[in-house]
Image (tube, rainbow, N blue to C red; front, side, top):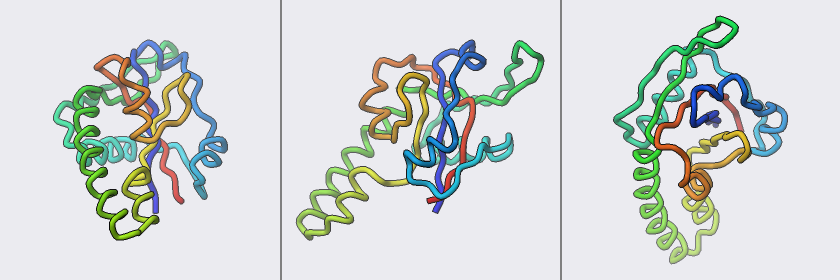
Length: 155
């Protein structure tokens, strides 16, 4: 199976100052067999996958010119829109966990509670966060977030 790590910043000015995550460290943290930075085409597909999974209506792709002249594709998303979708998903997961507990299916409890989809998010200063941890620790982030890089990983 595979999933994606999304690198987020709150301000576009941070793109050139961010400490990007180390691929080996990410793979060890996640337990991935391999992890690679995605090119622009795959970046867009991964952001669209996130958009579809969480029914995000306000995703804006734009090219940003860096100080040294290169342009990079970034995707602006609404934290509030994403967090509202996560809140709904959390409630659905709670119901699924209750059912799994009633059936004494601990593997499904872990899957429903924490391991679905496998999306991770990297915020400079926070390290890697899964979707539940992003929701838990990211409440004070700006409403506009920018996805500036994606990594595909296999597990």
